[in-house]
Image (cartoon, rainbow, N blue to C red):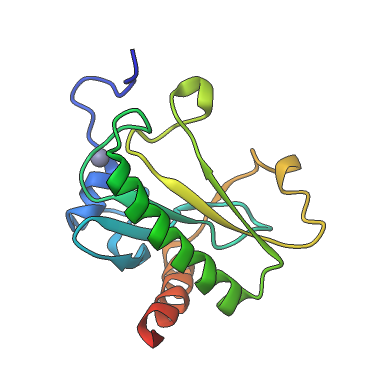
Length: 156
Ligand SMILES: [Zn+2]
């Protein structure tokens, strides 16, 4: 009723959180900006061109959506999301931040592992008019963004 992952789903986010290096199909290890024992944050493989770098915060263990996620882990995810938000403000001087999280197909979920988007916003960016215009960002460019966000975490 709450779950939609196909049988034998090979979860791309579990591969990342468990440090499986792989081809540049979606996320790779160089996208990671922060990781601790329960949570990972990474620069998303697909980006909104006017709102880069969209960053994702996810649990290391596999929980499909808000219905499965233990609330205590949700608090950890929120804690890291706040740090990512500070990093985006500090490094990209954005005017605002949006956090968004999708559940089930009707809720626009497309990767079956809980993830919270932390998105930099800019004055008059018309973000919601461009929400379906996502493009894959080259791996090297993502790595540059990841290093920049990571540098904020290192400073602290
Ligand atoms: Zn997973």
